[in-house]
Length: 340
Ligand code: B12
Ligand code: SF4
Ligand code: SF4
Image (cartoon, rainbow, N blue to C red; front, side):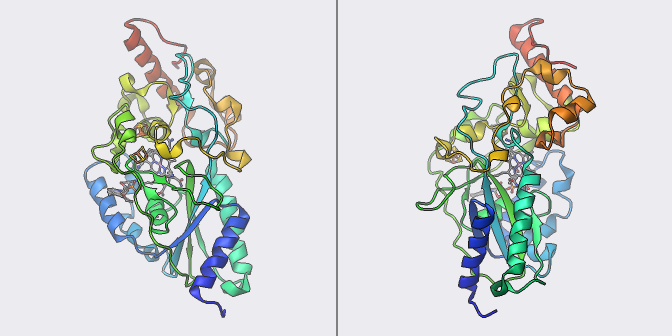
């Protein structure tokens, strides 16, 4: 290997672009400030019942705790933006539900993992990057790695007041601005030049904080996951116990409201990753069609889909809460055929 760290970084980025990543940047392995915030939030109870967030918490402080050979973190983004109107622009009617955009197309874990493997193969095969024996560690949601914090440190976007990573857009580079990006991380043993961290462009805006129907932000940048519709509908084993019927709306799986209002998401550039774009049947499905599914029907209805994170029993429990909300609003037995 004769190249300089800066030259190697440029090669890594070129490989990442060529395999299909929209965003790429390189960060150092330590994440001290973010980790302190992370721990403070969990101590405040904001991790809800996701006990796995506290498991191995110290590992998240430094990528070398996860893998001692890590010398740099390659932070990556894949767009799933679509031009379709969202929940606010075209609200689902009382007989329809909302599946969050990130889950309307193919399961991103599967899709992004394939890109990660392709990238790791290229890095290993490039003689300027250490030769075939070079190993890497790949993460998309799957490990004790603070993906948003590394993405910000790698300069591909800032963590907005809605606690999500927002890409500012760059002239002459692919990947429109906004937060409709999946994040992924590669831990590498390569000595690379680091990018400058991204700066915050939220300014005085607070649209995401104000739109949240459940008041899930105790302060800007901090989410109390106990109040988030995404937790209720995706992570909770018992949605009926935790979800608030008065504020759930038509959300069957996840919620996009604090992204839809973000000015950086106005007129997004649609993703070039066709499999991640919405499957028509996942855009405002009827509640009745979902309520009618049994376990086998659910698997057939959602092939290779992130919706399979939940069991049909959990989705039916969400549908029941949506129906309860409709009954509350109508003051009687109003409600669509949403119950189990
Ligand atoms: C657990 C989890 C959730 C939980 C908790 C969300 C949360 N905000 O923490 C729940 C189930 C609620 C959730 C919901 C969603 N999620 Co989620 N989730 C994760 C996961 C697996 C871990 C995140 C985590 O550790 N959270 C725990 C909290 C305590 O940590 P934290 O958010 O990192 O805390 C940071 C901020 O609070 C910030 N902070 C605190 N104070 C301050 C102060 C200042 C000044 C600043 C700048 C920052 C700051 O720093 C902390 C440390 O980094 C990540 C993948 C990963 N491994 O990183 C995906 C991830 C964050 N989720 C993702 C998505 C898409 C979503 C949803 C949009 C899905 C949906 N449509 O329903 C919603 C969005 C809700 C929201 N507004 O955050 C994407 C986000 C992509 C992006 N552009 O940012 C990720 C990165 C998955 C991925 N690989 O793409 N998610
Ligand atoms: S995803 Fe929905 S419920 Fe969760 S913080 Fe954003 S607006 Fe609030
Ligand atoms: S809506 Fe406004 S405050 Fe929230 S993330 Fe976007 S720019 Fe920042």
